[in-house]
Structures are given as C-alpha cells and as structure tokens.
Image 1 (tube, rainbow, N blue to C red):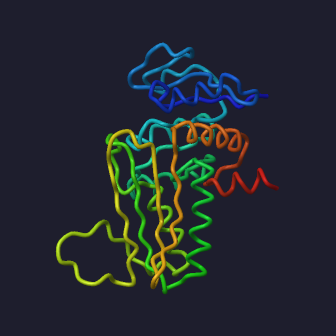
Image 2 (image 1 turned 90 degrees about the horizontal axis):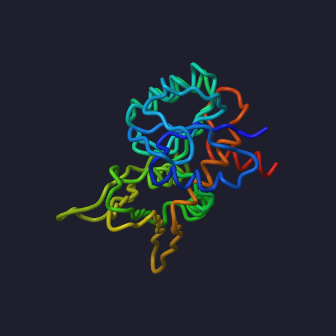
Length: 254
C-alpha cells in the first residue's frame, strides 16, 4: 500500500518538486496539500489543517519553521508521522519537537540530501584523524531569499565535528576588524547569500603548509525532494520518536 502524504507548503517550489517526483512513484502519493496561498496543482489544497478531509500516513512539511506547533498537533491528533524539511527552528521550537516526539514519529534533519550526509560522515572522520593540529572553517552559500544564517546544514556539520572534540569548540560567525590571532578553540562559520545558489557547503581543515577541503554542491532543489519522499516512506508505521537521515540509511543498508 502506498504511503499517503499530506504536503505542507504544497504550492511552493519544493512542493512542486515533490509532486513532480510522486507522479511516477509506485510507493507514495500526495493525497492533499496545505498552503497559505492555495492554487490548482492537481491535488486538493487547503489553507489550514483544520480543513483537511483526506486520510494520510505522513505529513511532509516544506512550509517554514513558523507555527510548527500546528503541524505537530495535527500529527499527534491523527497519529501521523511528520517529516520536518524546513530549517531555522529556534531553541524553543526544537524543545517542542522533542516533546511531541514522545507521541509521534518525527523525522528531523538539517539536510535531506544523501550527499550532505556523506559529507557529514567524511568531516567527522577527518576531524578524528587531524585533531587539534588543523583549524576548521565552514563556508556555506545560499540564494538571496534564505532567511536564516548560518544554514542549518552548516551548524549540523559544526556539531558533528565538535563531537570529536567533546563539544569544546566554540562557533564564530564571521570576522571583522582587528580580531587578533585565531583562537584554536574556534570553528569559523561563514554565510554567503546571493542569486539563486541552491546550497553549497565547504569545510576547510587548515594545517601547517596544507589544506584539506571537503565540499558539497546541490545543483537543484530536487535532491531535497527526493530525500523528503524517502523519509516519508521510512517514517510510515514507525513508533514515536526522533529520526534522522542516519536512521534511514541504516535501515536501507541493513
């Protein structure tokens, strides 16, 4: 039986990518959408979850971090899984997500791209080998409409690297003025915004007389739609809890 999806943010660019991919998907289908600005897209679209009539298994949320409680509450009331594909969540939002994860299965990751999750693993391996001898700097680039900085993915990469150092590294967002010599306890994180850049992340391990660079570039938003659909299929039928890409990959490769 197909995984039935409610697509939140259905009329946006990411919603369009998801619907395009689902046209030929034999394992998942979008039964309806929710969007503040409904339009004709081939499935029923409602302005609010309170208007939804269709039965579903999973919510895929590409709307925004704002008002996430509404989506979580609907998922809890209707016993649905939910894939949170947005970024920019506040500390309060993340605490709320953790609370709802006690009642419903929630898939939350900073980046739904398979390539980025490989990048994450490579960065952790590099940090383990290189240790304190190399300075770490992260540069992320996104389109000029992105609201949050640094990106959730850049922070995810920093957190992954920091695990190797028992969380002792502090994050420095850019530099300006006479800041003095670089502190060894820093991980620098730098945000670039411009044009229609989909998403680029570059991690520099800078040592004495050599630099190791590990990078990922998304050439279209389609890669994130692919990941969201995979996450929805994975989440269908799962017990309550927090899930992320490493859980999906472990199950697919088991």
